[in-house]
Image (tube, rainbow, N blue to C red; front, side):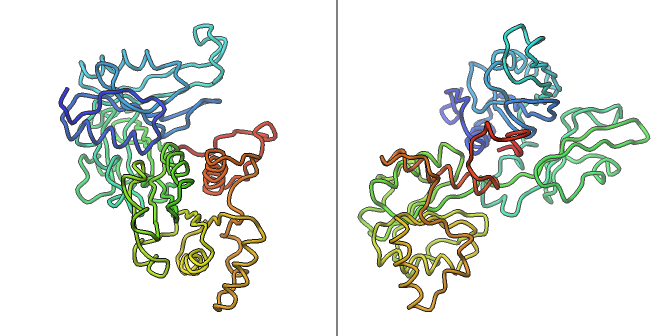
Length: 370
């Protein structure tokens, strides 16, 4: 293994780190297998689109189950690398036939295993190249001699591999998430797994006090790209926030110039400085972000509202995207507990959930994959 390739296995890695691991294997030219959940019948730990990188010597990142298939996938990955051909494996995880182990998923999962190659570059492109998203399709079943399992297509102009036109034309252009498409060709039926690949979501934390670090660390572990914006240059440094993807030192009035905010961004304002918050919140409301969390009690936010009204900014017009006080009501007060409250709320809002108890949910608890 080269010095540039990842070595340690991290099965709990979020999607963004799985993509980074795959990109590292490609850059280093190391052999590896990409495992993707392409179909689920019943309940399962991960949904279609979940990915895992598997490399010889137990290297890799990510998971497609709760861990019950890790050893099986590692063995299958060795076979796939030896054969040099992609395959789909079906795993029945129901408690009565999953080796009698009672794994608890109670579903049937189809996993596509592919030798990693340059055709996977569109899946793992850097965030700036994925702005707006990219549609990719892979063959998971084929009775057509022209098409093999693992053949890929993407909507980039320089797509690494192309499908026959009659198959490629069947790829829908409005997929939001994942979909399965069956195509009847002159040579036989072809089944495609289609997914819309998007960059990892970004959380921008405005503030540079000590309580920012647990928010950064937890958000990074949850799969966010994290930017920290500080208003005191000596405190906003890479060394202070080593897990942040970007650290910016600026002034409240230059916030929009320092960060290019987009509608998919989430922002948490936690400077603990009333004057800074007053200016920064006014700047943030001039951006398209749909989540702005504000640290501090309700009484403090009422004072911010009054101060901004004096500045000609009416918060009532933007109240639906302002979460103040920020966070879910988890009852904790330590910095780490507050960080869990904040990141949990950001996830809930992004996933269109309220953050209630799962025992009160009637139906599937995972409506979308990472």
